[in-house]
Amino acid sequence: MPPFTEETARQKVQAAEDAWNSCDPERVSLAYTEDTHWRNRAEFVNGRAQVVEFLRRKWNRELDYRLKKELWAFAGNRIAVRFEYEFHDDAGQWFRAYGNENWEFDELGYMKFRYASINDLPIQETDRKYRWERKS
Image 1 (cartoon, rainbow, N blue to C red):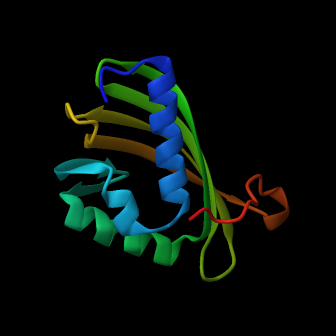
Image 2: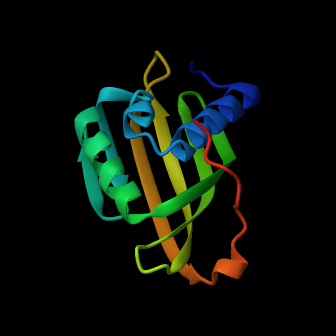
């Protein structure tokens, strides 16, 4: 819970990475406040129900999703993260997405705000970096 130390900020980032790699929208949504607010690329998401729907759509399009997050900075109840993830679409084209997220947490440690800036790069399957098994 905030305020974060380097150790607790790293734990929060690892927990987020593990949850997102599960590709389980309900599991992921439990890390957010009931009234969470997101900006993900050009899409705005409000509340856990919309988070679940957003993530279902995302993982129906982004197949064999694999994510790696890295702590960038932290202060008080905020954490900044750099990330990369890979996926392929239903036509078999692989992509690596690069981005940054800014997170703000409530006093209980639930994420209230998530702002994500993301860019996708088409890659060849042979250029993939992340090939581990999905965590549950």
